[in-house]
Length: 134
Image (tube, rainbow, N blue to C red):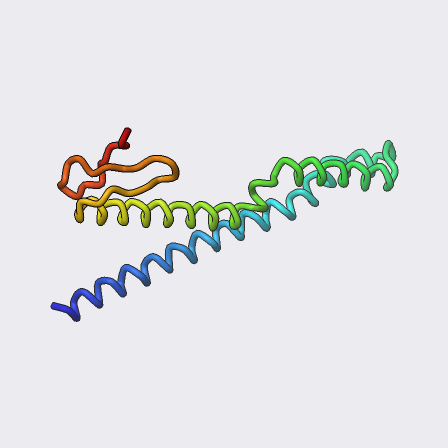
């Protein structure tokens, strides 16, 4: 029975890790494609004008740089996605930890302090749905 629980938990851990790696791979591929696209797309759009002789090489480079800066400024969230997701994961973990600790306090019949408010366990069932005391 215990071996079965260990194997099932290990299977869940491996499955979760595979899911994380697959998501990271897709994000990395998208990010690289997005990054290199900002170099290729403007040049591909302006190249016909350059080859027709209506633009000089310096103007092509200026247009590419302008496009790159606009895209870089707009895509701040994409570049900071990993940091944002790590921050949100920490917030979710802290929220879960807080809820579990609140349920433990309610099971013991102890009121918890939340900043300036006190959470009272009125139900006594340990469901964590305490009301704020007045």
